[in-house]
Length: 222
Image 1 (spheres, rainbow, N blue to C red):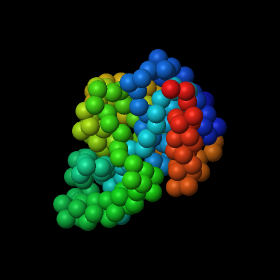
Image 2: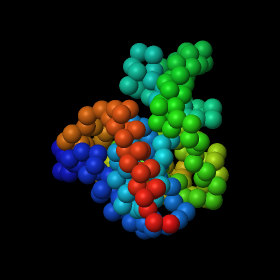
Image 3: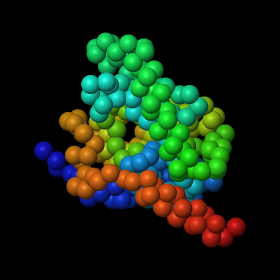
Image 4: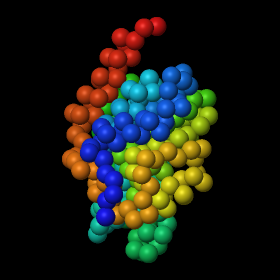
């Protein structure tokens, strides 16, 4: 069934960086990881491209009876993206959506504070923003990330992941400037199935990777 898989997110990030080599050394590039699983991937990419890294916190909106099934996602700045097909099929009313969004915004705010503290979001005006996650299934959370990034005025938005459902890749090609992926299988099922090791990334791991990037930037020659 799996002719090719990644050992872990680190390998996924390194192989993804190879596909993004054309952005290496450019002063106008910023890399963003979607917490939590996208951050280890983004760290590997940012390291190899010599680009700054930040987090773009988004939260999936799970359906009431199947929290793992995304009916949409939210991002900073009041961004909300809904999967109208799921909402319509499951007959989820606006009041229920609003209640789930309110709960997820509490967690979104907590994570932004935990990862960034008082540091303001990166300025994207005129820059190329590379948005990275560990994979794309339906793409709801990435769509929220795209909307949040676009509001900051970047010159170009690139969606980059080690693995994505082929249909989702085709959809994103109509929504952003470029989509980069290592694997794009027609049969997909779930992101975790394409990794031999897919343990949950913790808040501490995210903070540690961001701290390593900060130290590296401070030590780099002017």
